[in-house]
Image (cartoon, rainbow, N blue to C red; front, top):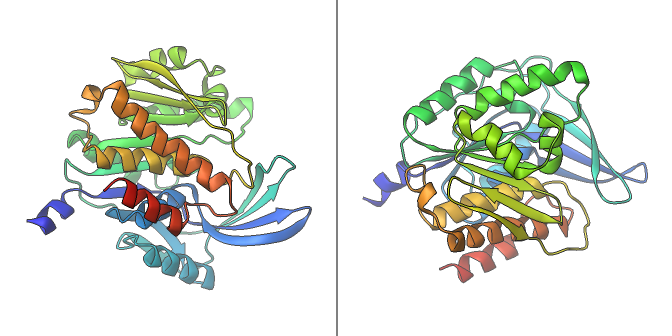
Length: 314
């Protein structure tokens, strides 16, 4: 019975694998396996949750390092596609406030992702530029439609990069195509300013709820988190921390949401029934995970911190 339940209760994280090379004062200071959704997957794997990573990487040394790292941290890699070519690299140039400015390098050709068949109790999280690029978009939308039709809980973090005015219409169109197939939308205030020229949670929720979004979560760094559902509207405080790096903070906020959903057995059918106390606990996980990552060079919570979380929630 346990095996059957495990197969019907998987967490699928869909995104790109990126090997991050971090620069400080013009010099490389660290190299780490990364990628927005991969960071989420590693944290969930360290928490012993049943997480699958859906991605692709080259048959090169960087790809080997990345695949090995995923497996070492409890992430199932059955849906990671390997290809002949170089894996994706990201150069992250840190400023004085420890925020990163990125430059990306990737293979010119890579195969399409291979998506799993879903069960209603699964959770899917996806986002970043991988969710709006034209390459492989039809397959992604087919997968999201499958999730929608089966009532799977889907979590979307658009993680929008800077773009010019000419790109706004196309970017917004693709994001909103995704939102028709999403239950939980979580993004930073900067994401929504870039998309809709506002970070007012009420205005944003009025715009995305008719598309099918049941939960909106707006983060604002160390200021606050805003949550909106059909039944709830409140702000959640965020404790300030001494930041070493903001890389992975948003990704681990997402991991905290997933951990909270898993702990409270929240899925699409009952997410509207979650009361404010439950949401406070979920957002506490999310903000704590993000803060823990901000205090280190890592893109994910430490193994030691994961052990403490698991012990405290048993």
